[in-house]
Length: 143
Picture 1 (spheres, rainbow, N blue to C red):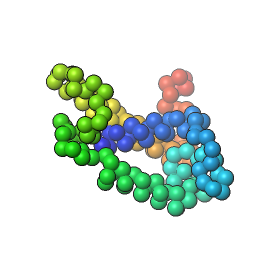
Picture 2: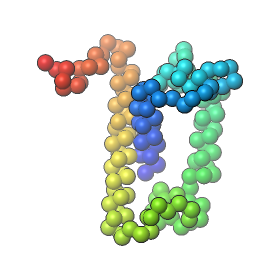
Picture 3: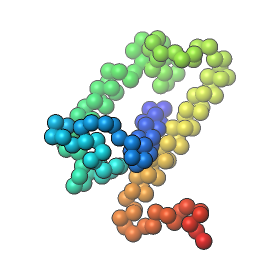
Picture 4: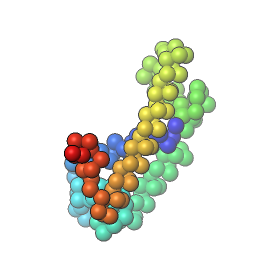
């Protein structure tokens, strides 16, 4: 469940930033804007990547969330990955057992699809510099 949720965020973030949507303002005190950094792997490693201390802050924040926030604090979780902790419900308790099972299966399948999607984006990003034509797999370009 967790990997699927992370993959969904990664895929959506990759698509959004490649579409040119970035946070406004500067990412650091040096005046670098969010859109001044490249997309994908190039934002982590490469000549224009974010600094090591910036990457460290991201890893520390994710670690903090993992250890202290994103867990079943109250012990009331109905299933693995249930992090409502008695605070967030959005009507989950009003669904019958069959609907709950269906929604959990949908989330699991969407996570699997997102894992394949982000893997495809990462592979695509790495093989373009090798001379791969990015327009080839699109059926409309195969004449």
